[in-house]
Length: 430
Image (cartoon, rainbow, N blue to C red; front, side, top):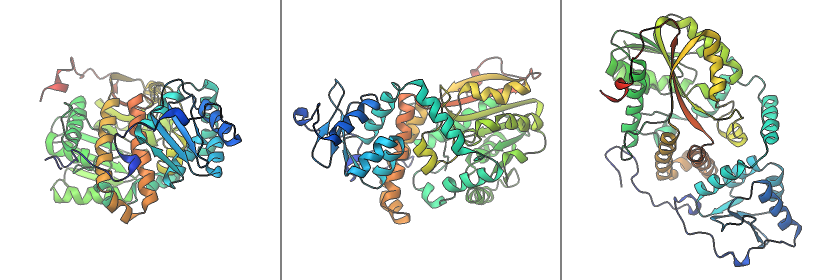
């Protein structure tokens, strides 16, 4: 069934562990709380080390183990000894890899399983987070340098516009939407997000805007079409820039919008507004002061700026599987880390909004469209790719649902700018 907004209203999916809801795992009478085999004891250790989630671990031997006092809500099947050993040595990497290779199977709701793991992960000691952060810093090195950023962006965004068009909706916006109501569809919510951003910036006809990281161009074109501004939009994804330029020409907005294939560090000129939606998580916290230099150099005295980014409540590295398999170099910042952009240049922070649950809802729409197109995706790539991106989409939704990830919109301006909003009324009235 299709809604008039193009998203799937309901989907009956053929993948057993991809369905949004299934029956609970089979009866727990045959679950061994005190396993005899060394593999079972290893599984028991793994569950305890993971914070005792409400999960049954089943082995190829027929053993079933769980350690939580509450009834299990999902069952994980491990197919062989090598997969078990890798899960013990590096569980954060092995689940994603094992699921993608079909060596690990989820009996029940995949999203619920990931939520269980994220919730249980809160029981880990702080030293584990610190060790991961140090290891991540060593591994990343210069991953978000000029050359490193190009490689990272190419890995994720240049795998085919046709692929993304299957599940992003007609706006081709690959960032958190804004849902004025629970019934708002995906495309309408993406347009509402763009209006939300434009209203926060209080854009006026004839002004100039610079956008750092423009995706497929939807926000730049929206600003030009509906707010009468001129936009210069920067992006280092070759495929996205080519798509955006064709789109601007087709919509007769190419005189108002210039799409520049270049890094944000090379932005020059003076502008009334700076906006970045969905790029900061790819900058790297060590480069935040440099981004602040760029903004200070291009933002006029009465200018305004807005940064929309995935973030965290506590500074910690990106999930290692996401970093290695999906988004190399990504690092969602905490608000404290974001202040390295603002404090050294005395930017005044005017407004901070967290749209975390809006991103969970956005990801639900994307996942449903992705699953509806799974046969076409498999034809473009293979079944392993389908399973890998299913983990990515549902894992990301779970992370926003349980609060592992946040979505920050931060509005700011030069400290001397007094041409700022007196109230917030302009945000909620056309």
